[in-house]
Length: 121
Image 1 (spheres, rainbow, N blue to C red):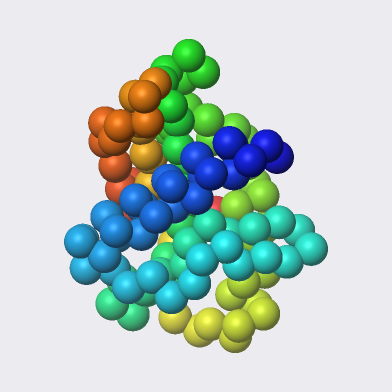
Image 2 (cartoon, rainbow, N blue to C red):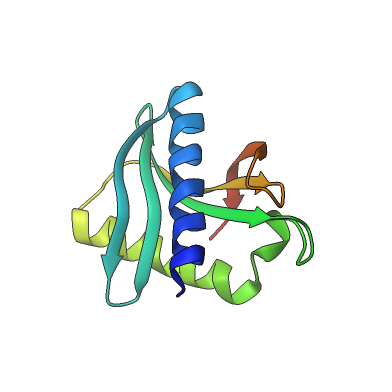
């Protein structure tokens, strides 16, 4: 991954974490990694564990952030969420949310949209 792409992703994750906090969620981890991949953010919404996928786009040449979630990516996120739940022994409810971050070509924030339970598994 290029430095520019990594920087864009990190900026998106920071904006997403701020939006989640504004909405009352508590971010408890960033960039949780295992052999199967990475979870961008992990939060708590009351007693519900929230696995968060952050999709950041600069411009719409390749579609909106929401449109970038392929079937393969959905399956991978569901698998990662199940691995995290198993590894941590989480016993409560959990869900997978999407936070879409859109910037203009100059890098200025256009929107941050939180979509609860966007990915079901």
